[in-house]
Length: 304
Ligand SMILES: [Zn+2]
Image (cartoon, rainbow, N blue to C red; front, side):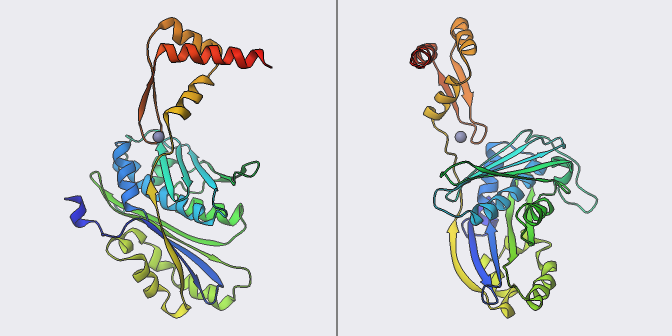
């Protein structure tokens, strides 16, 4: 039923440059990821809208990450009732978690999901880039409105000193995500005033980005919007929702909670259940396994 009305293209990031590389643009479709994540978290419509905006936002940041093994983590820590939002990206694979995904808010006066109210307009946007070649690089900016698009644009301008045009959108209702995606345009050093003006003229096209990508391919849209700006397409990369958790990672996390806590688990004598925040997979650990963790930690303690 859903599949009949959803545009058939898979989720992807399309890279292009404009005016002989004076500017670059990323266009993102993230409809399927937004639907899957909303289903996993049994998200309310406002939470689904927040997910459907944060995913393409993270895809933009991920697309800018250089190096094959780069990992990106974005935390939106606002004062709204939705709580913290977390999104991780590595090699086009995404995972996302929302602290209070069941909170629903009334629609805004113009009939949109109140993402700003859900996230809150006071707080931080925290971006951690890990190139797996040393210390992760963290940058933080203040939230502007909690609507996520403006917050990300402000992050690019303040933290990365790159004036950027950002639009994020999610069209969803009653548990169904009809479209989710976004566009990022960044002026490169040496971009002429004329090109900047041409880009600014196009801002109204992006005001309703989720409706734009609802029934057209990213390339078709780009060809229409940037017809006079010499678009050069650099390729399209697939984007998928896929958590990187494993039983072993969870076991290590449990082993690291501390001796006292582990001893308490053994004393109570019941299986421990842990659930991944991102994919909601539950894994169980027997008392025997916890005893082994204690024994192992004793060993590593002795050798120090
Ligand atoms: Zn997981």
